[in-house]
Image (cartoon, rainbow, N blue to C red; front, side, top):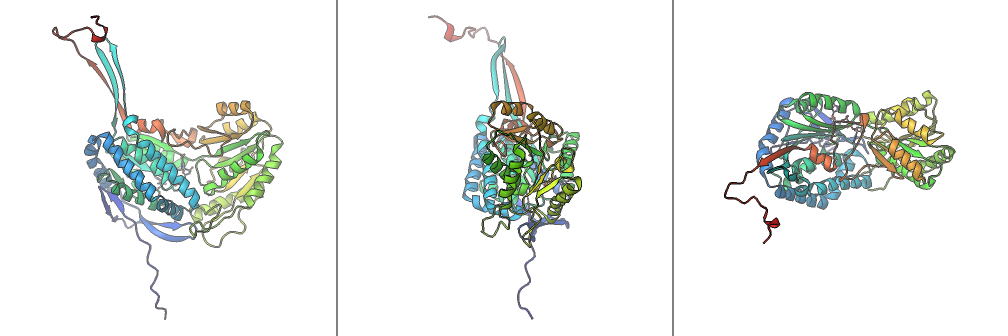
Length: 504
Ligand code: NAD
């Protein structure tokens, strides 16, 4: 008889409400996987509506004192948070890798992008300054100042477990709001770790809260009378739903959705540079990026050479578990169901008459959720491969005869997140940046994702709302302006003349 102890059940992770970590009372849970092995590493509670209500109330209770905390002191807490993030940088990155599956190098890069948002938010005393105009009318001065909104909510996707939450809460908190994060139930561990670091940084209880769950919690947050603003990042269908539901209930909503990003390769491009950039863009993070290149559009006679060279390079990429210490080029997808959906697109491609030039369903690791880099050539713009967001390492190639035809491919696309051109022609680059139907444009850049100081300006079905995350738009989103008009009359005893004009 074996004496070995049975394997410990995966722990159910807590929620953070009003500064206290507590176990949810919900009996509903969801599995958190290590996608590299397929093992369940934790359970996440799917909280109830009433638990969401409690968390929002805790955030509202903490609001007045936090909003009254001098902005310089609020910034200092964020400086301390940044310091802790840097000290524990590798732990955060490893956690991202463990629950998401991206390589450690990719996880580090993503955490670094989040840190940059914290650095941006640390400049809040300058960023929050208003505008003043003395003498806008006779004896009248006018000024605009920015006030916090109240309780802000962030609902985040699985693909960047630390970075996307950091697009939101550092800015919201620095502006004087309190925050409730509802992380993706697929990757809740990194979010909880950041909650611990914020507490250690000295953030007062209730300023940052975490509630885990699914639609029940999301709906409770979207309709809660104390919630003032909602930031959402996720797939287009849910982004639209969140935008409509949130605005219907009087919230300010910024809601970023899915994408289908085009990368145009002109005949005059440096082909080695373009292929390397396309490879990183399409297969980095296993294609699970909203800014991943998913349609290559080679123009003219470069197409054959481009496809051959890309397939040759992509076929040599090492694919495997990302948490063993062994270096690989690409990790797994998030779940078994998503792996099957992504791999299924290669069957769809064959049925639609496209050519699978590189089939990523071969030689896969025996456990975990893997698909290797795949390239589908001869895709037509009306095919499913060109229309659906696949969100995996499957690059479609739509061949075009001219730049105009390449621009037309983009015009038909319902999404509008990112797009890039590879060229040595200033004219082609200019035409592309002026006319391509997307909000974030790259010129000889594979992933034109803006850094923290610039807004993440998705268009069309890739974004619902007005003010995007990041940059000054983020500050505007998390504050409301107040404009003050002042008139003071001089008394008889007071001089009307300004002393600097008075002659001696
Ligand atoms: P998702 O839409 O499935 O989930 C996002 C969030 O919504 C999660 O927190 C989830 O719990 C919640 N949710 C899911 N179903 C819901 C429902 N029916 N009602 C209410 N809430 C619900 O997205 P995902 O699969 O986690 O993430 C991948 C998607 O996110 C991709 O489409 C990707 O393009 C997109 N994304 C977009 C950006 C951007 O900036 N545009 C950035 C990152 C990811």
